[in-house]
Length: 342
Ligand SMILES: C[S@@+](CC[C@H](N)C(=O)[O-])C[C@H]1O[C@@H](n2cnc3c(N)ncnc32)[C@H](O)[C@@H]1O
Image (cartoon, rainbow, N blue to C red; front, side, top):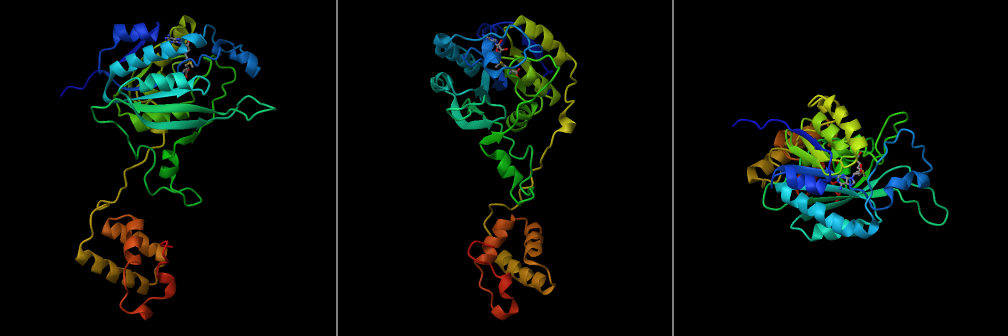
């Protein structure tokens, strides 16, 4: 089958009209988007006391009283254009999150995760707690195969210095990712950090997938999507931002950052989850005693057995734990397992 050509299509228009005009039903694999939050985002710099010299003018905010209807309209379009199995990740602040959640719940889209993204530089407060998180609502359109690349970034055996699984940590639904500080660079208000976009794209899409952003802003989603070898399409209503940033996307080569990002490999043992055969259990026991007699430590023995029997270390420990050794004096106490497998 001939591969579809990569698409890089951006429209300087309202995303609701733009989607109706340019996007076919079931044509998008993944939507990553960060709508205006209806919190007077066009005036936010006053609260943040931020210099706006390098921030692009013309950010279009939505009035609070229009936000519920606006959210319903664009989310209905998002639902229509997603392919069955396609996914949507919406970044939202807390203030008007309820409107986004209500809009999502009025569709056929199904919630997979509600992720908390914790970032630095919240606004300092004296009489309440500092707000330093956003929400990422991860939904999918039923009826097709959803993409979730479990090992896109870490293999199951990769550990940090405290022997904690890096994969597990990366899969937790609280993400600590700092916002990027880009002194002296022309940027959109509220640009999403590359690390966050890379993570979403690695887990939720395949190379050559079509990724759409309804609110391109600084085109961050499009830039990372192209850099990771995905197609990118989207809308931005602000002409100043559009004219500045779409040119930046053109300078990025397809797949140019793929070699710079951390990737994992699926190292799930071949026989993980398979029932043990009786003969295999006897072999496991004999081999464990043999390794002990060769002077291997318990940890080394588990690693060896895990690779020889093609099962995870916990599966090996669980089995050894439940075994009765014929002659207890053959094996010293520290080679037995306590109830928790230690
Ligand atoms: C929060 S920003 C997006 C930031 C973007 N994710 C980034 O990383 O740069 C929201 C953007 O939506 C744009 N916008 C507002 N209303 C829109 C609409 N109806 N259609 C398309 N874009 C719109 C705003 O001008 C603003 O640039």
